[in-house]
Every structure is written in C-alpha cells, then in structure tokens.
Image 1 (cartoon, rainbow, N blue to C red):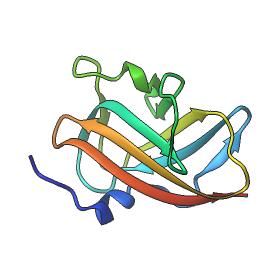
Image 2: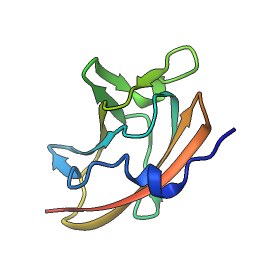
Image 3: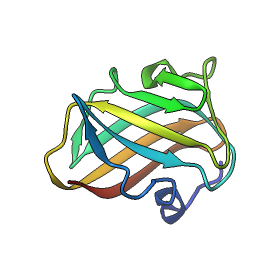
Image 4: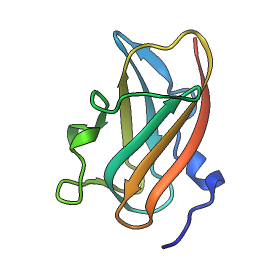
Length: 120
C-alpha cells in the first residue's frame, strides 16, 4: 500500500478549529489530498493520553456518524474538499494541545498524524 507523508497528513487539519463546546471538544479535518474512504477510527490521543472512542462522532454535510460505527460495511466517504468535524467527549484546558489521530482507510490502510492547536 502507498504511504502518505506526515507533512501532507497534517494539512488535513483545519487550523484554529480546536474548541470546547459544552461537554465536548471538537476539531475539523478538510480533505485536500485525494478521495478517501474511512472504515474506522482506531485511536485518538490528546497530549499523549488515549481517549475512549465510544463517544466520538464525525459530522459531515451528510449528517453525524459515531466513529465506532465505521466499518468496511459502513464506511464514510471523504471526498476532496469535504470537511469533517470530529467531536470528542470531555473538555480541554486553555492552552496548546497535541492531538494524534489514527484512522483506517480502505485505500492505504491506517493513517496516523499529529496536530497541534490551542484552546482559548
């Protein structure tokens, strides 16, 4: 399978999109690389600590999906130009945070990439 350089994967992250919203925090990803098919979210770390995936949701123009509901039989198409909002239970303290996300794709297998952003 092909590999995607981490520098390109970091470009999926929408800068300044990390924010607390009620009892959760969210950030956005925008596909600027190539069409993809997400078949799973296998890991999400914040500041080096794993976060449970069972309450994580992915929202696109087509609606909201639970991340743990993604599979080969129930994928999420991620077209070029499309944006996904990832919402995670819990809030973040003000300041800079490192988020590392690992998604499973049909096209290239697992993709892991870190992003850094601040919460005001």
